[in-house]
Amino acid sequence: MTTFSIIKKMSCVGIAAVLCSCSDNTSGIWKGTCSNITSGGMTADVTAHIVVSGKKVSGSLIIEGKALVGSGELKGNIANNTISFIVDSNNGMFNPLIWTGTISGDTITGIYRTEPNLKGTEMRIPPQDGRFTLTRETPPAAK
Image (cartoon, rainbow, N blue to C red; front, side):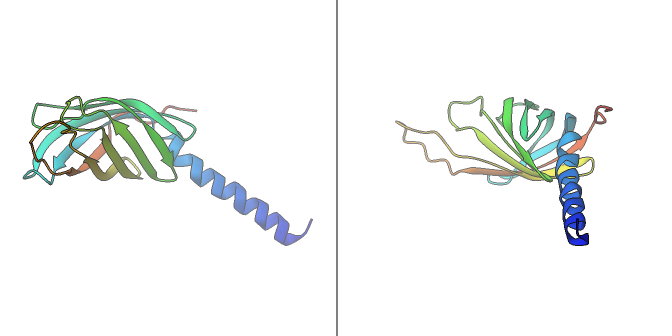
């Protein structure tokens, strides 16, 4: 075995460890805020219960209060330090919300977007965009 092939194998193992490390430790309870930047900055507290299995994400998202919609079951994917998931709007006026965030240690920051679902109405509502920040409330499970 050449030095190059040993380094190549070690590099692949190192990259695989980095790719798995974020995913393996992302499961847990995350709390923070979300803010709708399209509609004047309405803000709400949010709690995400995240379960990671391989590259798949599941769980639930709870948005407190009535100012913003989007509480419900979440489903999505995780790769490297990026998490993305969809949550039904729990409101017939909007399609599911698409959340995309960057994981950095015990913080997830990102954006969300939803399109209005106004078929058959005269209402005109623009797509809704927002930002969110979540902080880990529970540590990752011990291995």
